Length: 206
Image (cartoon, rainbow, N blue to C red; front, side):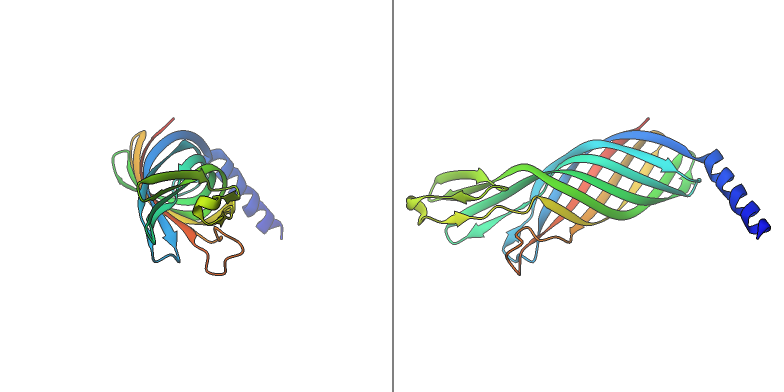
């Protein structure tokens, strides 16, 4: 038992002695759409934010980030063209594995969950040359000109799984990340869509 405790203590000291913390800024272009919606087409958006990396050893680290990101989709319904653009504050927490491929060059493979909260965004609808715009996270009635149609608010909370790969060159990195939502956009709809998002981005580590 004492030997086990000694080994565990030495391991913790070794990790603590190596542990390194770094910060980064990042920005990217999103290509997003909805899962479970055959009529949804991809749309282009963006994301930007800051991140932190806690390295336990040369191979393994944890990478939480705080991002402002747009998601959504575009498509057609009857005679209308529709674009859905929700905006989120997002917290991905990724487990990352780093593999050296050259002098100060690495490939980083990562995966983990993300949490997001909708802070804004809108539906943009064009019908017979008439443009309409109304918020996505708020119940809306379109009035008598549109058949008194009520549009329910989307769920603000979003949760899902992410994975990605980065290529690091000294302090710079470029990456490709994918996110697959697990929560419904509309809780009362049994076949409700879920977010799917891909990001091509660049960043700088401090």
